[in-house]
Amino acid sequence: MVTNYEYLKSILEKIIVAHNILKKLEDKPGDLEIIKKQISKINGFSHVLINKLYAEKFQSPDFSDLRSKFEYYLKNYSFEKEIETMAQLYSEDSSRLKNMRLKILESLADKKLIDNIEYVIEKL
Image (cartoon, rainbow, N blue to C red):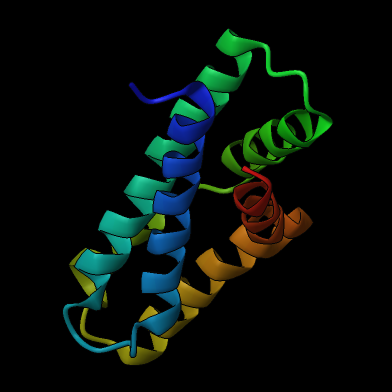
């Protein structure tokens, strides 16, 4: 049976995997679909994580801090409309793909979200 901590760790690891995939893209035609898929994963796992942290009442301040950073991320960053616009007009433009990818990576670095995720994974 999987403990709550193991479950949280697996979710956080999936977010890190999606982040790493975005980092390694080379902004080639077709990458927009990969970007779209990875941002959907990150957003979905972020919602799951927030809900789980509220439901289980974890005592660690690390979890409270992480939850607030995910809430901030979801409240302040949304790329779905931009991605849809790009898909119709600029899906083959490597400069625009790179710009979109870098904006997403910057949003994940805001408030040191990715660093905090890695820190919590190590503690679990």
